[in-house]
Length: 76
Image 1 (tube, rainbow, N blue to C red):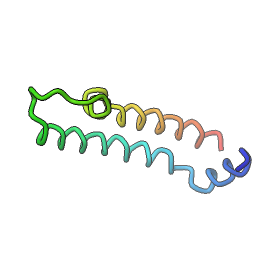
Image 2: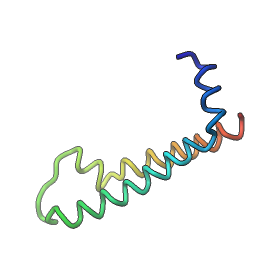
Image 3: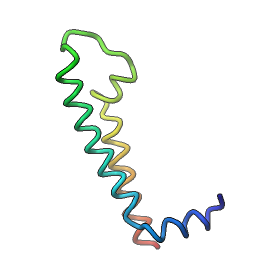
């Protein structure tokens, strides 16, 4: 898929990256709540679970995607 076709498709749905960013932030909250309820505090966690809970990976990805969506939406 060429870049011009991608930008044409993105122009039709300008708010999609921002909505995906918000969805990732909300998903991060849900993952944190579920991990808090399911995993005992003294139990060590694996690397991926650490990234999702303590590292807030989804939160950071959501914020970056939302900000990029706002910037690209203004350009288009």
